Every structure is written in structure tokens, then in C-alpha cells.
Length: 114
Image 1: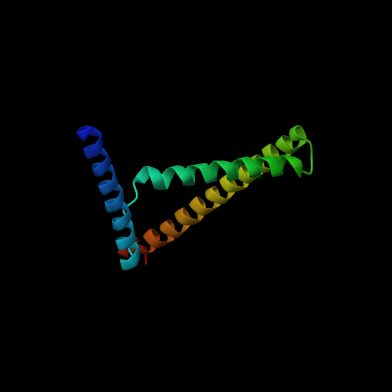
Image 2: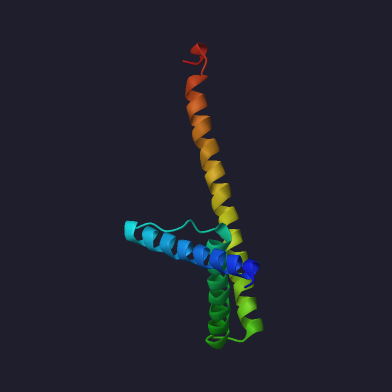
């Protein structure tokens, strides 16, 4: 009889029973073992990557125009939005300066100006 193998087998069986018992106990109580960050994050990254691949594929399949025409239209749309944004920002700055000037003008009038 090989005592070393027997002890190893008993140890293995005991640890398996303990692990099974711990899982069953936690399930009965309504708890679960704490998952590591890798066990949580890696599947999410995989699903996100698969979603990106599916989205890119569907986008290419159902694009209304050829790639170069679509890029040209997007470039012009972005340039138009930038131009409108700059105009809107300058209008807001001018309006702010006008309201600051009115507020300061009323406060800084000299008494001899009446």
C-alpha cells in the first residue's frame, strides 16, 4: 500500500467536498463567492469587441454611399458644424461684452454727468 498516494487522494477528496459544500452553503444563504476583477472585466471587453465588430460590419453593409463619398460628406458636415459653432461662440462673447458694458456703464457714471 502506497501511503503517499493514499494521503494525497484523501486530501484531494476532502478539498473537493469542502469546495462543493462551500458553494452549496453560499447558494442556500443567497450569497456567492467574490469574483475577481479579471473574471468580470474580461467577458465585458469580449462582448464589447464583438459588438464593435458586428456594428462595423453592419455599417459597411448598409451604408447608403461609397466610402469616399461618405467621408467627403462627413468632412463637410463637420466643417459646417465647426463654422456654425465659431459664429455662435463669437455672438455669445459679443453679447456678454455688451451686457457687461451696460452693467458697468450704469455703475461707473460720474455724478457730474447728470
